[in-house]
Image (cartoon, rainbow, N blue to C red; front, top):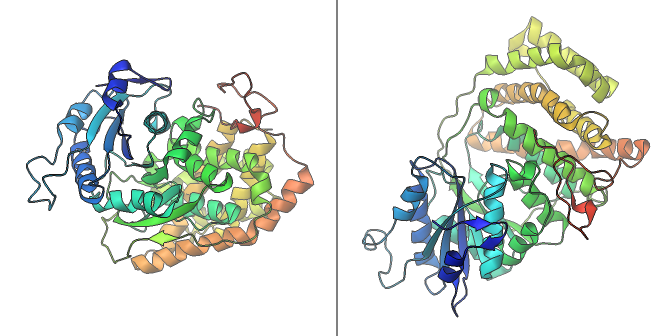
Length: 459
């Protein structure tokens, strides 16, 4: 196993990648304790590269967080060798090179991605992709869908378009998708999807950013990648991948840390790119590659009572902070929802129109930097639980197509509320630029443009 350290390849890894023939396609797989599933992902990637890019030099790179369960061994042992006939592969096409490395830095997906970006820059890769190591629905076709638009059509970022269960991906559905679409004017359905295609030049651009000691290095990396591409002049599209089956989680039980890091990144990025979103007044579609088909997805079970109870508990603990952060009419709306939850839980509602304005109130408070940002975003989680509980009830009888239409409409609601955000932002005066004050844990190098830093503190 080779080790990538601070952007410099070890001698052994550099020797492996040396030669006259450059790497055309790099597929990275971030991993941690994924021995049970990573072999399947590696075989699918290898089959996809052999089938769809037979004349190109390809490399599979596993970026591991020092797993102790045999993840790396399982990845390196996985192969399509000997199964060409069954997999409809040409046995004369060479298998891609494989490399395993242990990433450095904060524990998290972002640090694993950083190593992949730096590797892509080091080998001069033209087209790249990253895939989650816990995927059970990945197929060889995904490689073509993610890398093909880069190599054949010149796009820099390919975001995934999944068929997911209506209750899967609640952070994406309730905030990451509608907020990103309304703010930056592009209808990207899965801005934090986890599986992306991208150009080598975008990988090098990401690798050079000074954000790797912030929450971007944990769960915030997906939305950061997408937003940087949208706002800094890169060509963005999306590709149909079909169902995504992975280790899904109950939003009321497991998603607190991810919510804090994703939403903190969203809000910090809004502060960084205010000039971009303040001039955007519509939402445009992006090119979508692939053929959509109806796909069944696994049932996601959500404990509705837990979500409502966490909202009520949150009001008890956070109502004073909510009163400070939220506009008066929005706080009154939350109090009405609390009354409903206490008196008649089955009729309880936190409307999406109110939720959009709550998100904007929090975005403003985050960038004003008056309240500790970790504390602030944590206080938003009970409100997110309330919105999620409302969606679970509203979509209970929806078909997958109806639920998707419901979610798509959220972006228009956020867009309709955007003038409120712009007015409030202007009325308060421009919040302090993110580079004007050092944030604990930030990296800074001589000559860096401090406006590149994200004001996200690690918890």
